[in-house]
Image (cartoon, rainbow, N blue to C red):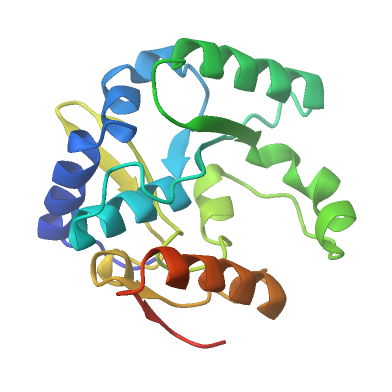
Length: 193
């Protein structure tokens, strides 16, 4: 695990708290009410990129991913019920919410992506397998601040660099993501596979 610079955390906090998508989620976090839960991935990275490039806050953001860890309930129905509840709680937020229990990803990953994976041990463990170092980031409120999980640190995210995290992602998935991102945020530095 890479150490995270306090100045980088402060910068990330400023960006996410001023976002009309992320700010309301963070301020009303108690409505999420899920164990070991983090707001993660694209919504975080794309909010940083929009801030850096001067784009509208919603530019290019397809969804807001909330991931949690509940090994005691691996049911798809429960996961779906949480997603429905969260979508209702944040219906005023301009984003589609996806809610996933990382404790159950191993049950469907092979069917969706053709590779069997071992069960994750925590949400942070799952975040460490996200497709890029810049999107392997999660945030949640922590008192007056923001807690951050970023297994690869924040340098790539704040440095506007996209680099593959080859733990699980395939070249095809990485290249499809980076094609879309290159079109939406042409100023990114994208490291080839």
